[in-house]
Structure formats: C-alpha cells, structure tokens
Amino acid sequence: MAYRALYRKYRPQNFSQVVGQSAIVKTLQNAIIGKKTTHAYLFCGTRGTGKTSSAKILAKAVNCENPQNGNPCNMCASCKAIDLGSATDVLEIDAASNNRVDDVRDLRDEVVYPPSVLKKRVYIIDEVHMLTTSAFNALLKTLEEPPSYVIFILATTEVHKIPITILSRCQRFSFRRIGQDDIAARLQYVAYQENIDLDDGAARVLARLADGGMRDGLSLLDQCASATVGELSAQRVYECLGIA
Image (tube, rainbow, N blue to C red; front, side, top):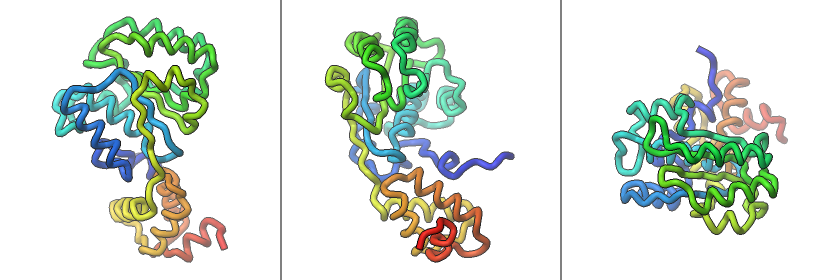
C-alpha cells in the first residue's frame, strides 16, 4: 500500500476531530441536529485550521443516512461515496484554477438539476477569493435564490478580497489559529498511532513552528519522523529542519 502523508491520513472525519474550533463545530452540529442548515456558508481563516475539512464533514452530515449528534456516521453509502470522491452531488472546486466567469456560469447551469443520489447537492469552492469580478457577479445571482436542495460552502484565506455582496449572503465562520497546546496534543496522538517516539519537547517545538496550522504541524512531524531512527527529541527536530 502506498504511503499516505500524515496530514491526509489524519484529516478529521467528523466534527469532534476538528481541533481548536469548538464554537464553530458546536454551531454547525446544532444546525444539523435542528435541521436549520442554510444555503451558503463562508469559512475563512489562515491555512491549515480546518476550513476544507469542516466543509467536507458538513457535506457528509447533511447527506448522511444515519447522523449522530450532528456528526456523519461515516459508514453509510452516502458518507463513503463522499469520502471516496465518487459522489457526483458533492463537488469540490478549486477557484484558483476555475476562476473564470464561464466556469461559474457552468456551475450555475448545473444548480437547476436536483441531486441524482444524495439529499443535498453541495458545492465546496476553495480559495474563493481567486474568482474574477465577473465570476463573483455570476455567482451572486445563484447565491441570492438557490434551489432548496443546494448548499454552497465557500472557503478562503483572504476574506478581505471577497465582495460585500457575497459576504452578506453567507453565514460567516472565522477559523482561528490553533493553539500550540492543542497542536502538540494532536501530534502526540498521531505519533502514538504511528509508533513514532515523540517526546514532549519535540511536540512543543513542532507546535510552535506550525504557527497555528495543524496541517503544517503534521507535515513537519512527517518530515522529522522520516529522517529519525529512535526517539524524536527537540534537538533532533532542530537538526532535521536546519534550525539553530
């Protein structure tokens, strides 16, 4: 079996696994439990804080056949299809490479069709600030009057670049930088699962270098563990990363 990077292998699969965003997680879970999900969400914040992961969890939760306390079960056919990327009703779009007005017009034309298999058609638009002005204008009409079966989840690291007309039509969630203690604890958990001998000092160093991003922390752990035999200490982390 091909090796999978730690940040991919340990990507959160339900809201309880999202680290350091308890207020956002609670709000989304309550919305799903109370069947009060809205048609458009905006997830903003620095890199590696859980925006895209939360978007995928939300897409699974609204389509899950057996939701549990606002979490997807991850066992039903709908959850498995979304995890595998084979669910045609859940589309993840990279706005960095699909930022033209024609791309959004194609999306707008698709929206009129109801979901083919799942309960909701979900569009996850990553790095949405990369859309052109014309593309934003084309998206605006769809956000104003979407069909009841459509949910848009927009994710961005640069919320100031998004037009106010788009912002005003979304529920906005600001993902904060993850605290060093939370990152260190998660790194220790992953290290235990992967049989990596990670001491507390090394975990704290990696958490500090991650600068609030869980993905960065896991990537650094992956890099240092690959270059180390035996205990991964703080000194070994400095040596692996070339830091004095």
